Amino acid sequence: MEKNIEVSLLFDFYGELLKPSGRQAIDLYYNDDLSLAEIAAQTGITRQGVRDSIKRCEQQLFDFEKKLGLFRQFQTLRQGLDEIAVIAQKIKTDSQ
Image (cartoon, rainbow, N blue to C red; front, side):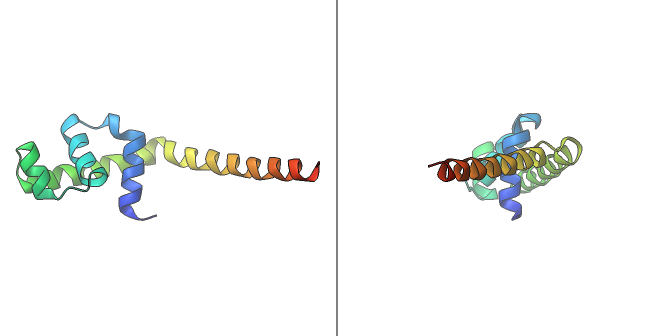
């Protein structure tokens, strides 16, 4: 999975566990597609500070997933539900 998409999905699952400043930086960078300079101007910290915050939060998101596995469980459940929906549709079609 592309890193940008993966970080964005992990942020959806674990974003509330991040510190507010890091959560804001990740949200602006990945979801609002702002540059580091734009985020720095908006938040009042340096571009390097924004970059460091984003990198630290990315690592935290991956660590949360490694320890908790909620996103992986969600994907497994979603795949199972999709398979059930296909089987249910086939049963419905066959019974008509």
